[in-house]
Length: 423
Image 1 (cartoon, rainbow, N blue to C red):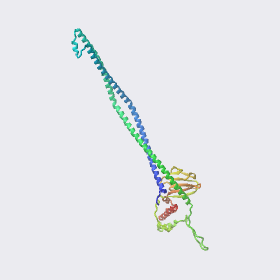
Image 2 (cartoon, helix red, strand yellow):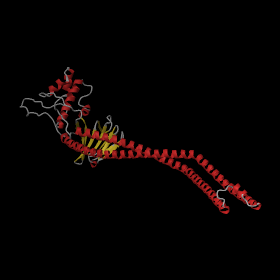
Image 3 (cartoon, rainbow, N blue to C red):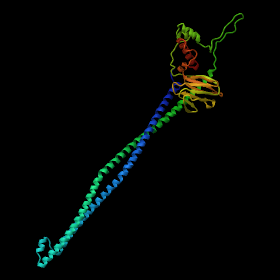
Image 4 (cartoon, rainbow, N blue to C red):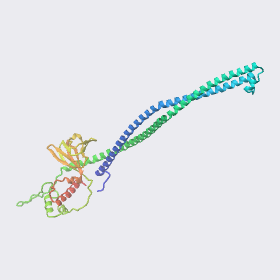
């Protein structure tokens, strides 16, 4: 049969795809959040290292700046002293020229141009005094200049000694700052990816809810149809009573009496006939055709007539009720009642079987999904599963019977189920 957009198998497939994508996006979100947590821890550690490096760098940088300031002060003082000395020398020369009107005369011309011995003596003494004064001043200025120069050299050496440590600390601080910037950028990128993932998840959740609602509506309708067919009766139509003096037999074997007779099929299989011949014998006037039933679900009403049931999954499963999903552990019992509305127990592992318990105890273990459908104050237990899985649970014939009889029974059961579904 061609698949349509609203076929239950198509809806289920689309829902499974959306849920799988949701799971992938949740995994991606968890991975992004884990990465972001690690990145932020790294960022915090780097920022702490940067703070420590800055704390180590600050006093060294302050000391280097202080030395630079002292060097600048010493250089300025030295320049001031040299300027003062030059100004003094210029003033002295001006004074000499004014007193003796020497013009361009040199000192020995000044001495030997004396007009008398007393003048010569006075001039010599005056020059001596000037020389001594000038020498003392020159020595003083030289000492000050040498002291300032020595201080400047010491400060320059201190600055040179600090330079490697200052450069190393600055390089370390710059490297950590670069790492902080790179990690902060990566954290921003992760945060952007996380927001995009959350947006995708929100869209997927909307799709999942819409598909689940559509599937729930279909399953509710199918369950109600199964309930309507659960009371159907089948049997041979007997003719009127025989005339007096004669005997007429009418009836059939155990069961509904429709179609295949199991014991007759067994006898034919033992006689060497194959399943096609057996089915053709019981279903005269029919033809054979192929049909893809791999994803065809079937709803089978298995229990009804009371208000409460219990179910126990043999493996992991989920309880879907009231728009909520509850994970069930293997062996966890769930009580079902009409007040719970439509409740579904869905296996999450292929090997999980759902055992149903009624008022009299254990009833049966089923493959597939078990649906509790309330109706008229009672609960109806409906088994929903692919038709091929349903056929694996047939109990009309034992597995020890001939294979051709079993195959004939499977074909008959498949056709009966599809016909009963209205397919």
